[in-house]
Length: 132
Length: 119
Image (cartoon, rainbow over all chains, first blue to last red; front, side, top):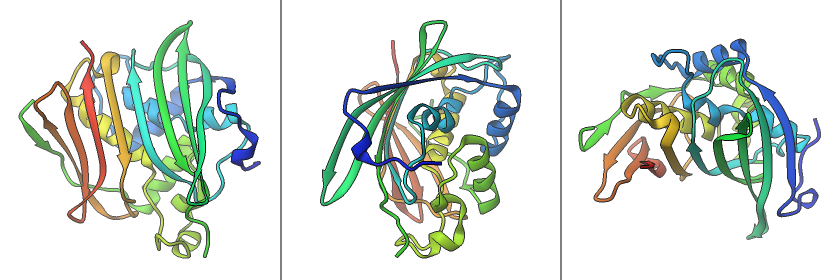
């Protein structure tokens, strides 16, 4: 899979994909997080934070090896359910270089039937922990 | 919620990291390749930031039934958490409507943040 570089992104550019929360994916994520939940059919909202694949798919690649997660914000407006189909929008919110290092900030919005269900902002330091 | 809450001790071993990586798509070598990670400045594989974040949310969601509709969490990953390291999640009501959120590993703050429920 192609690795991103900061050069390929312009601040303000948007990327889109669709994403279905399958029963298998929900079970795998819940099991990997050891979450026990008792909220009817609603799944834990925490799952939204773990939906990495849709962002990668929207951006068309993967982060360079050794990239480090620095900051994360999430706002919830509804619970996820098995079978939900989300429109995913990834906005490049900022990118900058500090001390020769590339930083990338993006916002991810999950919409269900045109309603925003979850909004996230992520800040990554690219290629920090490269092999020495 | 009581003024201050400290979670059970969490520990994410390598096999659990691998399981999470496969399920989430977070398959960076720094998380799943011990040989690669041992040659970086971190000296070993790291727990995903989003995994830590999701565990914080799990604690918040357990205590606040409206979390999935109105919850907001902002966190900074201050230091890395190595695979197999013990850590706890602390939630503390501050003087505002927010809660202070910290993750403590080896007596150091590794995640620092704020959480609140919108009115």
